[in-house]
Image (cartoon, rainbow, N blue to C red; front, top):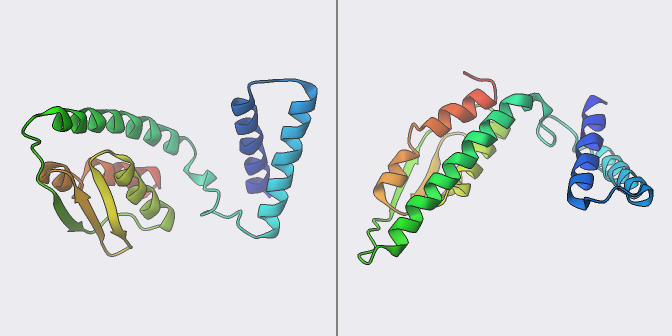
Length: 158
């Protein structure tokens, strides 16, 4: 039940942030839409620890701030490679075992790698990740990385 209330709250907050208008009609419409989506999600039985991981809480916010910085740094590095006339790329693929134990942690780690410019997760499962990097350095940076440790900390498994 707490997950349903949390889902409704975050959906309504998201509605208000995207709308930017606070007229009574739009606020009531937003509440109605958030309530309908919450009801549908409840009926579909998708409001669980995986579908709405409120257990991550503040740890997720700290992680997202760190990830945003990493995305900016990585985008800058990829931009420098692109504008370099020699185009110093060395596409590399690596396999490694992630340290996450939960599905939420594995998905968060795999998606974080893909969100970071210059890398993409080709295959992800509990036993191994298969990652492609624009350069050998970016591919190798995914192996036993700070990101792996931070995702584990985010899921509470440190």
